[in-house]
Image 1 (cartoon, rainbow, N blue to C red):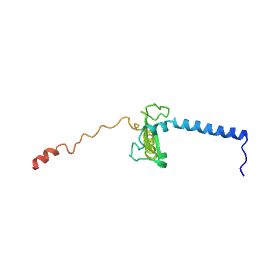
Image 2 (tube, one colour):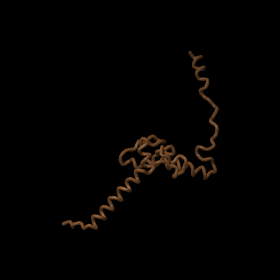
Image 3 (cartoon, helix red, strand yellow):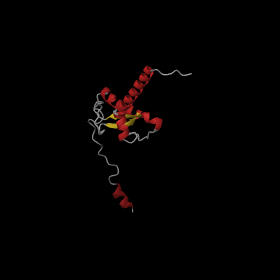
Image 4 (cartoon, helix red, strand yellow):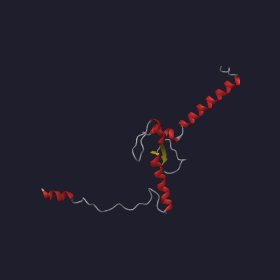
Length: 127
């Protein structure tokens, strides 16, 4: 048979409920929750869609690597699955290890070779 709740038990229960509500509001205001409301639930790298229980595999990546930079418009965020997020961060670690420029830094110029540049003329001659 359940025991009757005393006044102190009810006060404790009310405190727990109030704390749970505050925690929920705080969680909804985190950058992850804000990003999930702003962006489609799709990994920006691999294109996988996430819903239901799988949504927990979708993470927020800070484009500038600064976790304190959380503008209200979400311009520093992109949603990445846990695998692509790990890959993104390992790119920076590899760049540091090999003393290479970080991703988005200096890049080699694109190739100037154009294998199909004259294809249109070659096909005209065949007609």
